[in-house]
Amino acid sequence: KQAGSKTIEINLERTALTDHITDIFLQGKASEKVSQVVSAVKQLREA
View 1 (cartoon, helix red, strand yellow):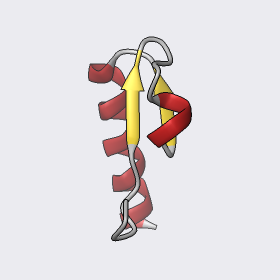
View 2: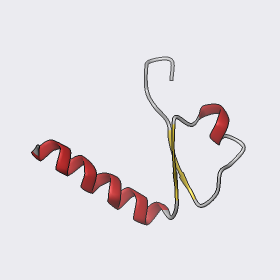
View 3: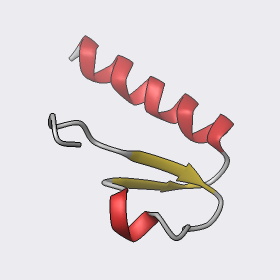
C-alpha cells in the first residue's frame, strides 16, 4: 500500500478487513470473479 498498490478482496461475504484495507471488494466465488476480471482485462488490452 505504501508503494501505491491496491488491495482486491474476493469473498462471499465482507470481512473485518473489507472496510479497513480493501480498495476493491468483489463479492462472490473467487473462481468466478477471477475469470471475470481476466476477461475484462483482456478486453481492455484489445481496445
